[in-house]
Image (cartoon, rainbow, N blue to C red; front, side, top):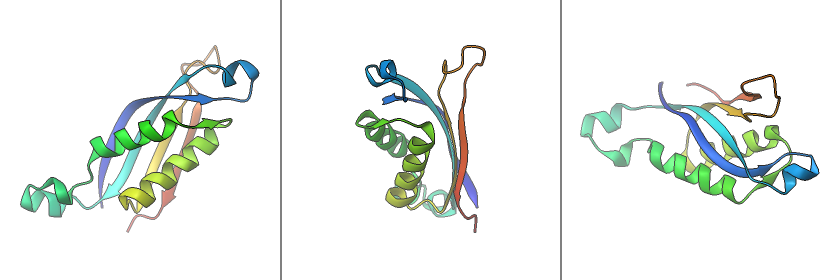
Length: 118
C-alpha cells in the first residue's frame, strides 16, 4: 500500500463550543495520509488512476466551508468519512489541528485512523 499525503491544508470554518467561536470563522490545519495503490497511475502516467490530492483538498475545503461543528472530533470524523466514501480511500490517518485554541501551545487537535491497510 502506498501513501498519498496532504500537509497543512488550511480550511476555514465555524468551530467551537463558546459563544464567541460560533460568531467567527477559524482556520484549522489538516494533515492527511491516504492509503492508495499508485502503480496503475504510474504505469500509464494517467491522472484517472491516481488519487487526485488537488480534488481531495478542494472537496475538504468546500465541505468545511459550509459546516458549523462544535467539536474538532466531529469535524475529523466527518472529513474521514467523506474522503473514504467519495474517493474510495481504504485507509487514512487524519491530523486536525486548531491553532491558538490553547494559548501556551502551538496547536492542539486530534489524530485519527480509519479503515484498514490491505
